[in-house]
Image (tube, rainbow, N blue to C red):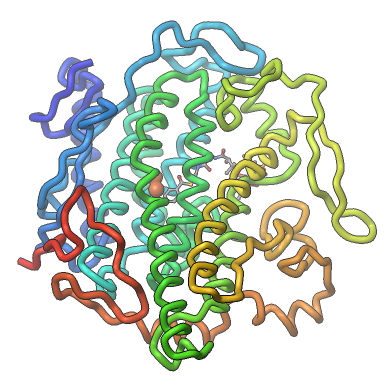
Length: 471
Ligand code: BYC
Ligand code: FE
Ligand code: FE
C-alpha cells in the first residue's frame, strides 16, 4: 500500500491510478471546504493549531504533529492494511472471502449504514462550532480542534466509500451529507443525539466521553463487516477515536478535581460560590448525555440489526473473540423489558437482540470510566459518587421511550416526572450557571478557574506550550 501525501487528497487508496474517482472526490472537496468554513469551528480561519495529521497507517508513526493553519489541514483517506485471506466473520456467509465490491443484494443496507455513520461526523463538528470562543485554555482549544478535524476526516472516510462503491447514488449521498445540518428544522441530522446542542464545555466533555464512545462501539461493529473496504476504514478510524474519548474523560476528571479541591480548601459544598462546577450538576449532565447516547444503539429488539448481522454487514463488538457459532440461529440473550409491574429481565432471540448486546458492552465501558472519576472524588475523602443512570431513564428510542423512569430504574407516572425531572436533568438554571462560567482563557499555560490543569501536555509538550497561535 503506497501512501500519496503530495496530491490534492492525501491517501493510501491509489487515487492517482483511478482518475474517475479522483475527479469525483476533487469535485466534492471544495464543497467540503465551504461547509467547513460555514459550519465548522467559528473564527478559526487565522489560527495556527498544534494538530496531529494522519500520514500513514503504520501502528507507530501514523501521526504527524505540528502547527497548521486550520483551513489548510490535510484531510486524507486512509484505510487500515488489508488482512490476508480475510473472511466474512458472521452470519449466513460466514467463512467466505470478504467482499471487495458491494454485493448487489446488500447495496441498500450497506449504503444506509455508511450514510448513517457518515452523517454523525460533520454533525458533531456543527454541534461544537462555537466552543472555541469560550475555551478554558489553549490546551483545551487545541483538543477541541483536534477532535473537529478528525471528525472531518471521518466524513471523508465515508464519502470515499460512497464515491468509490456506490456510483451516482453515492455521490448524491455525499452531497446530502453536507446539506443536512445539526438541529436544522427542515434538514436535520439523522440520529437524535446529533441534533442536540453542545453549548458549553461541560457538555462537550460529556459528549466526547459518552457520544464518541458510541462511535467506538459502532465503528468496532462495522469493522467486522464482510464488506472489506468498510472494515478497513473503520479500523483506522478507531485509532483516532481513542483520543476523542480521552478528551472527554480527562476533561470531566479535571472539572471533578477542581470541585473537590475547592470543597476541601474551603470546607464547603457550595462550590458554585467559588466559581466552579458542583458534583450534583456534573451528575445531571452525565444523566443527560448518557441517556441520549444509549438511544443511539436503536431498539432493543431490532430486525434491522438481525438482518445486518445475518447478511454479514455489521457484527458484534470484537466478533472474532466471541466463543459461539457467529450465526446465532437458536441462541437467546437476556434483555431488560417492560413488564406489568416495572422493568423485568427477559430472554430474547440473540439475533434480534444484537443492538441491546452492543448497548450492554457500551454501558460496561462507560461504567469503568465513571469509576475512574469516582476515584478522584474518593482520593479527596469526599463522600459522593457519580452514577450511571438506569438504561430506562429519559429514553427517546426503544421500549422505555413509552414510559418515565427515575435514574434508579423505577417506573413513575407523568405527574411525578414533571415534578421531579429537574432533580435529574440539567435545569434552565443549571445551564445558565454553567454558561456563566464560559469565558475564554487564551493566555499560555492559564486555566479557567472551574477546571484543573491536565497532568501532562500533548505529544510530550509541556502544559503551557503554545498549542494555538493567534495570527
Ligand atoms: N435516532 O431497528 P432499529 C459516531 C430508527 S456515533 C433516530 O433499532 P437499527 C460519532 C432506525 O433508523 C456512531 N432514529 O434501527 C460520535 C429505524 O428506522 P426505520 C454512529 C433512530 O437500524 C461522536 C427505526 O428507528 N454510527 O460515530 O437497528 C462524534 C427502528 O430502529 C435511532 C452508527 O450509528 C436514533 N437514535 O439501529 C462523531 C452506525 N435509533 O427503519 C461521530 C450505523 C433507531 O424504521 N447505524 N432509529 O426507518 C446503525 O447501525 C443503525 O442505524 C442504528 C439504529 C444502530 C443507529
Ligand atoms: Fe468520528
Ligand atoms: Fe470521535
